[in-house]
Image (cartoon, rainbow, N blue to C red; front, side):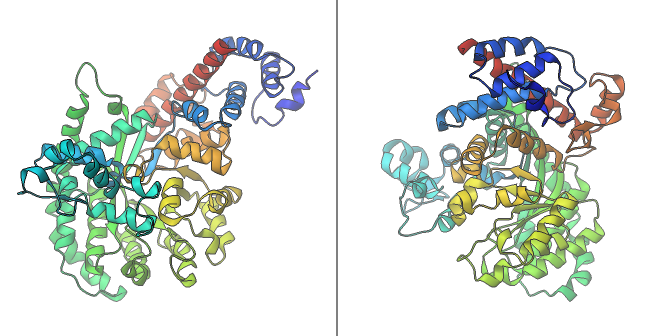
Length: 541
């Protein structure tokens, strides 16, 4: 016989009934009981009322289904696509869009193909160079253009003798031409639709309005030192303040148009309408220091003024000459602005480097310095093993709840870091919170489901680890309001919701706290997903 108590002793805070003991252990010992008997026994238990839809026995049964599915990439993809995935916290709106969508929008706008056939250009142009004509009449030229606007061809060996994945990735953005600045509302609609297809419930998009980006680029290029920053700050704030209203109105228009594209007010709204969105303003670290400072000032001002912007980020290639030269200056800018706007949240791309890409000295301290500058999340963090006193840095992240945003496809394509060379397991072993994210899924030809597949197949994530990553994607988001959990590690809910999510006190709490509301919704989604997977398995057995 199966020793049921021994089998379940590892499930915390769970008092199993005899039924649950039998089910969970039978799932772990499928040679003893048939699958059909296991699932037939479990399905009635799923409907039992519970304070929260947490059911360790149900989770154990679904974990066994996951272990069977992970043996095959196709089976695993089918299993993981409907799995709820929480939030994507590292998603650049400009890179989230697939080249085919950009080219379709460009054709609708009357844009052209450049003379070399590798980018989008503004009109005028000959009829055969118009995107609308080119895409219809030159199949191979169109494929070449898609390769140029993404890493599709590079990932299949096209052009690898001429460019690294790093080069191909970053130069793709310059080839979009005028499409991006003309298509913000369509981009937002597309990102939400893709997220819904991946069963994400929240996007924290890196996105700047055109109004503010124009202001950043209008700053005269010049030299700044750390000593110059305080004196320059007040003048910049005063000069930039009038732009905020225009930028907020621009975002309102883009959101309304994107909602119309998705049919959110109609009888048959796109599932993307159900995906919640907030924004991170992204400063540009490879620009001249005067422009970087202005972009950070605008980011903090926008996040202070508009609740749709929940934080500030800093982006562009970390290995760029200017980015390396001015790294300490950029961190000083963050410290100065954090002191003025202490409630504005901060996530920093840091450690998106690897040995050979830059000299070893550049790998020693970027993550630690980002933490010193007030980072509440770290984007990428790929070079952590090369940091001075890496263990102390990870211990600090674990202690302070600083999550690392893991981008498996991005790190593989851009840095060549994958498999056992990737530090995600190192972070997990040191207790650092981990979230999975897409980075630039359109340019990288990926999606969130693929990130979960890679985490399972390449990094050894089991079902519970993926579920924890999904929960972390909301818990470590910069969402307004309090969390559903007073103890996230133990999944202990706040007192108002500890007995019944439908209780009036809990309903009031969820109404006031967007983060808790999305977390409660995620738990309900998990309950449905797991019940559905067990029902499918029962029918097959």
